[in-house]
Length: 247
Image 1: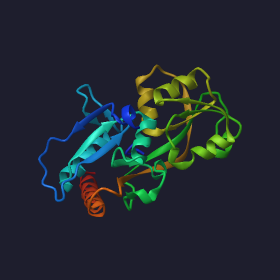
Image 2: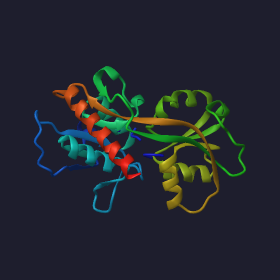
Image 3: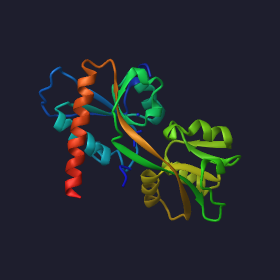
Image 4: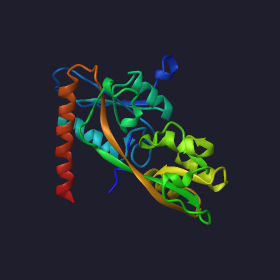
């Protein structure tokens, strides 16, 4: 089962979102609060539709949590690295992301449990020697997604590999792999499958190398942050129960 991250989210121009949508509901919240949810383009988990509205599993989750908890939010789309910077520099106050994205956990409240998870894969062209662990990537040419921590394993991967080639998104990772800019690409299951479904047919194989858990991450300086997090967690548990009943 996938929620298929999170997640996984500058001063002056860098603080400006590519796109923002504020919820229209008139919530009654005490104390008044607006969650500034920063997210990155990560279809099918979270993306903008033709009307520039957030869609995908995480968008549905956020809308349901907001409605249940009575806490309104503004969704803001950022490029990968900018979303991480803005979260750590407190330009936004909320994210659904991996813990590894935050520089200092003392500056944030993190939900007691994950709210989504994403499978992490190593992808290669058919005919390339298969790999089954991070250690198998020793001295290999890798294609990596810029701005992604891979749940905290990126530093180890970069240390043991060589000649890493960075790309902005999964579509470019697949293209780079197809044209042999690297021997292996580290990708996320749902996003890579979505990208492959939208691209020309190319034969790839993969192995699973881990799972990245996504959490609610709230800036600790938000007024009544603990109460807010408690509301979000309670709303998520109720939402999860609803899904279990439907299944």
